[in-house]
Length: 59
Image 1 (tube, helix red, strand yellow):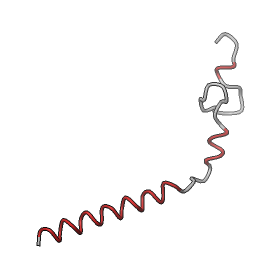
Image 2 (cartoon, rainbow, N blue to C red; image 1 turned 135 degrees about the vertical axis):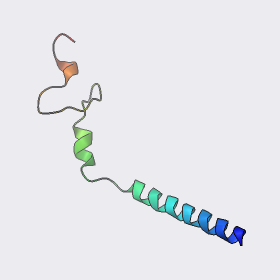
Image 3 (cartoon, rainbow, N blue to C red; image 1 turned 60 degrees about the vertical axis):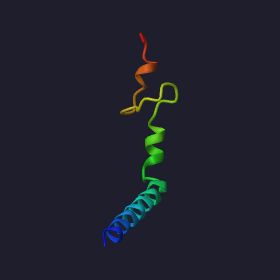
Image 4 (tube, helix red, strand yellow; image 1 turned 30 degrees about the vertical axis):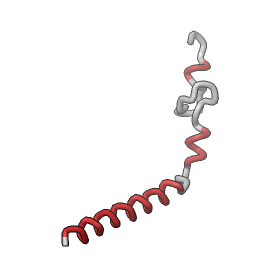
């Protein structure tokens, strides 16, 4: 009795982990736009259209 319950719980857990893994492999919409928003030099995310703070004078 207890063994069957534990087996069902473990099986459902493994199925849930498999489903999460499949969704993790999907690409998120807008991922390319987020990747392009990063500064190629320092890797920070740029907000707005101005230059990255690493390119400003005095830094």
